[in-house]
Length: 259
Image (cartoon, rainbow, N blue to C red; front, side, top):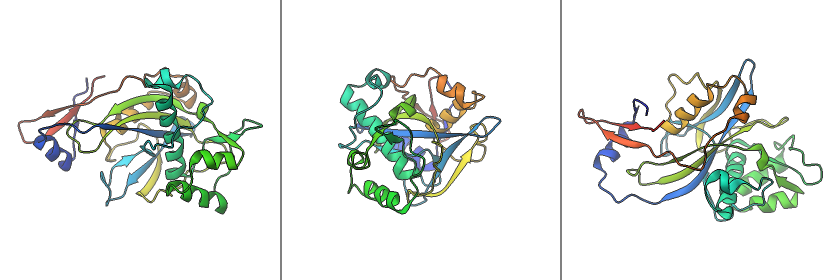
C-alpha cells in the first residue's frame, strides 16, 4: 500500500461530506500514448481545461464508453484480459480507440487488405471525419468501413483498471491501455477539452498536478527502460484497483492505493 496521495481541495470537500449511497461506475477507457525518445521513451498527456471537472489536472486521452462502441476486433482474448463479457470488452476497446482519435488525432486502424497501420490522418478530410465522430454524427465503425479500414486493437496493450472512489458523484470503471504512436502520425491538441498538451518522460512529473491513477501509471512505466519492455510486461487489467479514502485529523483526506 502507498503512503497515500493528497487530494485537491474540492475532492477533499466531497470526500468529507460524502454519506452515500455511491453512484454507479460507468465503463470508460484511456490510452497512454508512447513514443521512443532515446534513451527511454515519452508519454503524451493533456492538461484539462480550467472550465472542466478536474481543470488544470494532467491526464491521458480517454472517456466513457458509448453504446455504439462495439467494433469487431483483431484480438479475440479481450474478455479474459479485461475481466468482462465479450460485448462489453469490445465496447471498452472501441472507446479506447475512439477517444484517442477524438482527443489526440491518432487513429489505430489499418487497411483491411494489407493489415498495416495508417501513416497520416491529419488532412482536412480526416479532420472533418474526426469532428463528426466527436460530435456523434458519425460512428467509428461506419468511418472505418467507408474507408476500407479495420481496427488495429492489436496495437493496444492492457495496463490496468481503476474504479473512481465512492465519494465522487461521477464514477468510472476505467481500463488503461498503452499504445505506441504509429509511424507517420502525430498527436495533436484537438480535443477542445484541454488547454495544453505535452510529451513527458514517465519519471519527470514533478510539479504536474495529476490524479492518482495517472501518477501511479506513470510511476509504473518509469521502471521500464524502453518501450520494448513496456509492451512485454504482464499486467492485470481484469481486477480493478479501488482506492480507499482516509480522512485525516487536520480536515484533509488522502487516497490510499493497494500495491
